[in-house]
Length: 310
Image 1 (cartoon, one colour):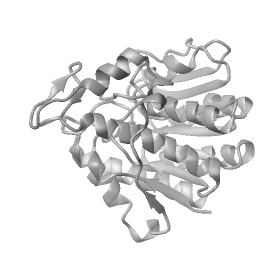
Image 2 (cartoon, one colour):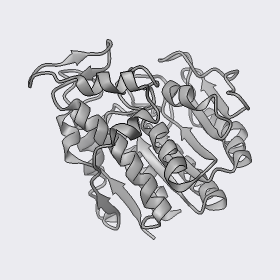
Image 3 (spheres, one colour):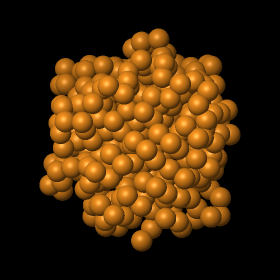
Image 4 (tube, helix red, strand yellow):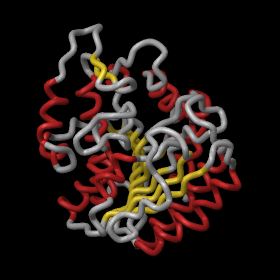
């Protein structure tokens, strides 16, 4: 059974302005990397915008109403904070990203794909239920998890996150529900300042592995092998969602970890094996960060290659 690639060219319409790291060229780098001959077997799909109801299943109604009301004139931008920017078509693009996460769940639950990778921007894992931050408007991984539970009667859903920044938004939604599991490796201290090891959730369902600046492949793999993957195994998810950020790469300008492309491939293979064991292979991966274009393209290619070959 094939792996599906979910992407939409309108991702280029999210205009964050000059010199912003979360720029349209990220989408171009990812899609170019996945045009190589080895990726031709991918099922290529375009998402629709997530419904208001899907957004409100995770975010407060007032927050969703506020974001949907934003309508900058063409060529202008609204700063929601110092880093998070909305241009004329940004809200549509963010809704497409949430829709891609939902489509990925549908693909693996309905059985027309074994795994899914949503190559969308902006990222989502910093968006809290009532706040945009860290380039993110909607919490795509949480939206995907709730869709899986509401539509397919799943109980235990896991999100694992290897972005260099802690997914505070995902954790904020998951931490009070024992049947939602979140595991993250990330640089600490670093933006957004959350993700300490003692943040454990309501029932040990949050597992954080903070890594000090300068940590490399050995520390990254040890965190996953010794702490995060065993906790995921113990949770026994019925659906596995991946927040796939590639900014832990040693070339990335926004942080100081020294992870390499083979490490992303290694971890992906481990995650697919756990998905095969516990949830019939159902794994949905969502693009998060990654701001060095070469590293991003190489990391995504390695990740998707592992999804296809596992």
